[in-house]
Length: 148
Image (tube, rainbow, N blue to C red; front, top):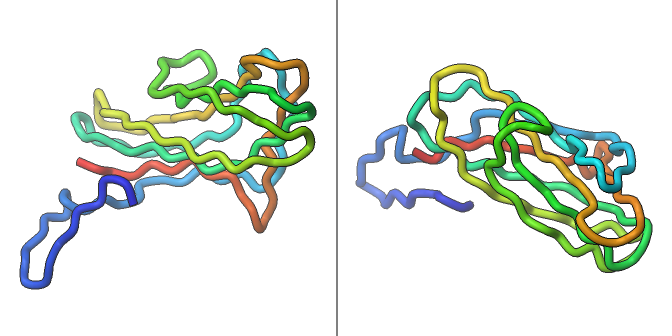
């Protein structure tokens, strides 16, 4: 677990020292296919506290239609045009073979209240289309954990 605090026997720990899950967005059906249009793949709404830092974790499977496509992933505030929290480019090497993607970013809440965070995808290079695939036994997750 990233950002975890180890507490040894006999030590005292504050609740704020321990990372804990705040909210989980879950997808159990496939997304639409996408190419160069940035598309929301996962979404989560969480009640955050201003000034605290949160770990945003995405777990998903991506399926390219052709080999050597690249997918640009972004964690954004609010929606597909919101401020970027973190971005990365993922290589999808094998056509019609899903690839597991784990993606991590940190977000410090500017204010207390409900906040929506989204994971978006867009083909950044290549010629095919890409799809987030999910099912009841292999869901996609966007998880918010409090870390400080």
